[in-house]
Structures are given as structure tokens and as C-alpha cells.
Amino acid sequence: MKEEEQLIMLPGPTNVPPRVMRAMLKPIINHRGPEFKELMERLTEDAKRVFGTKGDIVILSSSGTGGVECSLSNIVSSGDKVMIPVHGVFSQRVKQIIERVGGKAVEVPVDWSRAVTIEQIEDALKKEKGTKAIAVVYNETSTGVKTKCLKEVGELCNERGLLFVVDAISILGGDVLPVDNWHVDICVTGSQKCLMCPPGLALLSVSEKAWSTIEKNKSQAHYFNLLPYREFQKEGQTPYTPAIPLFFALDEAFQTIKEEGLEVIFKRHKLCAEALYSAAENLGLELFADREFRSNTVIAVKNPKGILDKDLRELLRKKYRIVIAGGMGKLKGTMFRIGSMGVVSRFEILSVVSALESALADLGYRSAIGEGVSTAREIFEKSS
Image 1 (cartoon, rainbow, N blue to C red):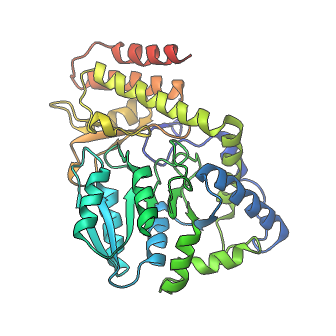
Image 2 (cartoon, rainbow, N blue to C red):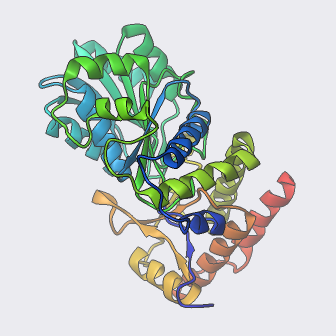
Image 3 (cartoon, rainbow, N blue to C red):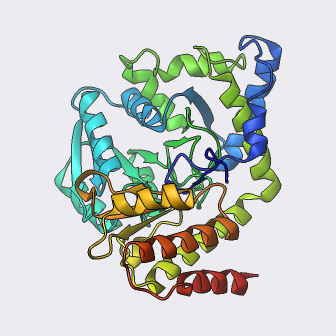
């Protein structure tokens, strides 16, 4: 295997299909010209299908975190209360952004192995009168925990006239999230996760209710002010120079998504996650997320006794050419995380399980070689 060839099983960035990579080799076009207008119109329509929305789509040349900051800076005025359940590094980050843009973050503390419940949200709202918005990290990338009550939170926000902001960076396109049906006002994702693109783009869906607030808010942001994006989009443009090759890549990625079909993609992600979870458990490994809240796109596994995740990850990278992630924040050094999103199928899952078995054995972990692979293969066989 060539030195540059690695199987990237991170929670982002993920493996990118060759056809998507090749799309970036297209000649640069004028971002104020008719070709780009045609591209933008196609991208926004395709994005609406993936988001499940009839609302507006904004594409930023930015990371996913930039998209989150953009969404919050446009709806939050000084002193506004925004509720945020915190159960991991990225929900902590959302809390920090709320405070940075002048809002008052109302934290709902949650055990990091679990996600918030609708009862916790309702209780917190009783205590915090005057809450303007609720922000939720749908899939906490740092813990492999998925929020199961997103639909119910959306209904609650709709009933009470609250804005609902969802960070779906590591899940949109890999699991169910019908933005309009679940009353999500601003939904954020990134190109480098389930959308199978290189890093560098953030995508936002924006509802009419959100626009009404944005218009009144008069955001102090410049690059991240959403109003110019809405105006320029009428002409099929962006207000600032876009990362054109990444737009080409996203266009091709959307074509692959259309060809496979979202429902099929969701089932594929669920099946791959099930195979990984079952294989890990059969190897005697302890999973971090409570079963009820396990993600279909990020699998978090506690370090086996006597084995450091940095040693396991280094061995996997050097000897087996597979790249996985470690823990983050207070969980650093306690776990490893496997991204199961985007370009993920039987091949990738069996490859990573086989390598994981061998690497663990190399480090002295005692388990039956082949048991994990056998378990994962059995799950795939049943599904077919």
C-alpha cells in the first residue's frame, strides 16, 4: 500500500469518493458569471432535498464551527437567553459562542454518556423565563451521543414561539433529520462529514421565522452576516469569494446522494454502526454512549484496561494504514472514536474491525482474533 493511502475512519474529515475529488479539478469559473449562477441554483435545490426543507439554504466557505457562529450571531442580541444542553465538547463550544456574541447561555447540564430529554428541556424552560431560542447539538461528535428528542424539542419551540437552532454537523445526510417537519429554524452542517466532501464548507438552512429575527437583530457580524447572503443569492452569487473547487465537489457529492437515495443512505449508516457496535462488544470492549443514545455516525469506545488510545491509534495508522480519533476535552486519553459516515460500507467496517483486532492483540489485549470480524460479517449477511 502506498504511503499516502489511508483509510480515514475519523469523525471528520471522512473519505471522499474519487469522483468528488476529481470534480475539484474543473477549471475555475467566474463567481459573478452565469456558470456559477447555474451551479448555485443546483446546489441550493439539492441541499434542500438533503435538509428536508423548503426554506433558504446558505453555503459558507467556512468550517462547520463557522456555520454555528454565523447562525447564533445573526439571531442573538445582547442579553438574549439561549438554552443549550451541554453533554460534550461541541455543545460546550456552542455555549461559548452564545456568550461570545453577547447572549446569555442557559446551560442544561447532561451526563456526557447521554443526551438531553424533552423533560429536562421543559423543566429548564420553567425556571428560565424569557428564553429566546434553544440550541441543540444533534450528534455530539466528541462522545458518539445522539439526541433522540429533537423532534419533540422542535414541536415545543414551535408551540412557544422559540427559535430552534440545530448543530447537525456530524449527522446530517447520515441519519434522519427532516428540518421543516421538525420545526428547525436554523440547521448547520459541514461538508467534510456525511456529505462526503473535503473540509471547508458550512451549509445552513434558514426558516422564515429565523429570517424575521435576523432582520430585526442587526447583527454586528460582517462576513457572517446572513442578510447579504440572502440578497446575493437572488442573483445566484455569494457576497464574498467562494471556495469554487469545493462547490464543484459538493455538486458532485449531491449527485451521488441522489443516485443512492437518502433512505438507503440512512439504512446503510445504521447497519454499519450496528456492525461496529456489535463487533466491539463481542471483543469485550466497553462503549461510551448509553445504548439508548448511541450515534449511527460516531462510535466511541473506552480504552481497554492497560492500553492507551494514543498507542492504539499510532499502531493503526503506521502498521494498518487506518486513521481513527482519540477522546476530546475531559475525555482525552480515555477513549477512541471511529467515524462511520459518508463513504462507509461493509468493506470499510470489516477493514477497520480486522485492523482493530490485530492492533489490540499487538498491544497485549486478549480476545479471540476474528470474533469481531465474524460478528460484523454476520450482521451484514443478515441484512442482505
